[in-house]
Length: 382
Image 1 (cartoon, rainbow, N blue to C red):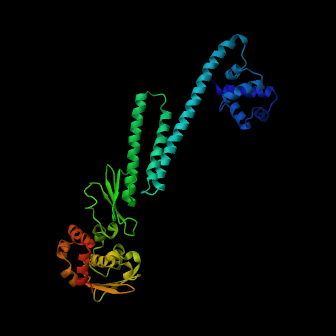
Image 2: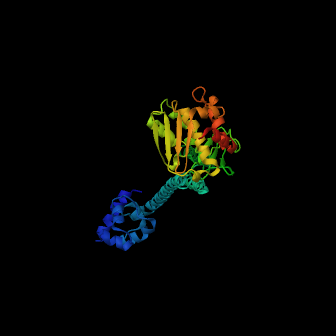
Image 3: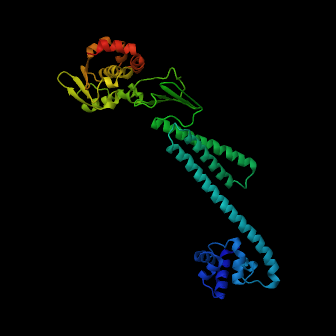
């Protein structure tokens, strides 16, 4: 079927009938642009318009499809040829429509899956539900493109696509967990207690500690070495205040204001706002917090913070001799020699620069023990 030849024939017949493109378009209920596209050979009239178009131009459908007038002796021959061409043309149009729809469904499905991973909070089941829905939509689109292949190949391609989609979704989810410190969307088991929320899947476990508090933090357990009872639980944000982060601020001198400021910002109590000053003469650190001490002392939070911060300051700043914590209600002071003598296992922690394992064992793990905190506070803090 020669579209260009048919287009020229339509234009020729229209002019022979002394009609403009606008007049023909009005009679057929289409736009001037559609007539122009037919006559320029850019596309063909819709099959439903063949009969009314031929009636307006005083030609037969056979002649329209041939793109010329047909003599009687060749009419039957051209008729059969045009039927075959029309069937081929219709099949191609259907295939193009199917392919276009298939590609549109694939793109739409992928967009739904990716958008669902970014719009909905990680702890909402809607993110995973819409991701799966998006995957199914894209799978329908793929099957629209696979109509000509065998069922066996189609099944193999579908299985491969599902596996690939799951890998992509799990990868995006894992990247979000690691980079944004959030729980995964795809969980097979969810359990929780007062302090710990656990989300388990086939590849890793994620522990959410201090849920919905300012000190919430996430532990991604790829080796599955922890349980709800053994996972490190700190009353503070462990990602921010743990030894793995604060050790980078180790310094020989208290006079390094930038380093000291960064260390204070990483430790507990900084969330309430503060200013600090350095006593260069007596090598002391004075921190003025913008809150009353009793106001933040639920479950010994103040005492735990002061003990934790004091041990960290003396471990990380070599020449620091005393720390003074000022609140709007009370002031607390800690001296290096007093802490070193009275904090259990301090020498084990400070040996070989800083022993991280000892720190976690004797500081982080002990910080949840209220009796331990009360005893240390009474001996160390003045």
